[in-house]
Length: 223
Image (cartoon, rainbow, N blue to C red; front, side, top):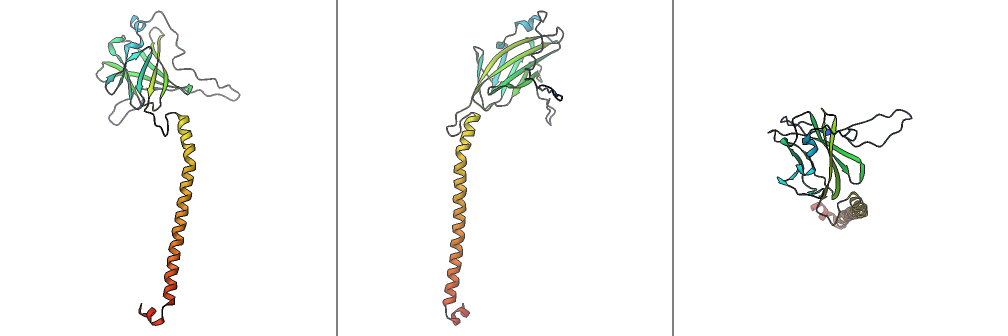
């Protein structure tokens, strides 16, 4: 959890690490919450939950969730919220995982927490800054019954297309690669201009000295 100077806490991020000894094999990381078993003994409220019970909010407006997908603005914060009365008041964790579309093994996991007025469990994630489809998973962990309710869906992030740069990492790398020769050419031209200016300045100084040397002695003394 992160805390700001006013004492507000973030919703919480989930991290994990594993140390591999000498000769050990580094296995692909498991998705958070995947190791929890499902159980038929969970609370009915958990069993009735669907993705439609969650709210996806940007700029104060609830986004439409259709066919397991919600379209979001990739340049804006996204708040994910679940009404407080949708789940029983028992010891539980509501976690969300978000997969990198370019590398599914890269997963960001965070927790929903109760807001200040105790009306909802919620979390806000920063702008994704990239047009892509992000798979997400929701896990509600019931600690009393040692079970988990799992839901899934996807975010379709849309970022206004920049015709010069593009939106993907590959587009930006290509743009920078194409831009590098132009930068080098500009630096070379700048260096040539600086050198020509110095030569011009030296030429003018030498010309003045030559003119002064050609004047009669009395005129030079008077000057």
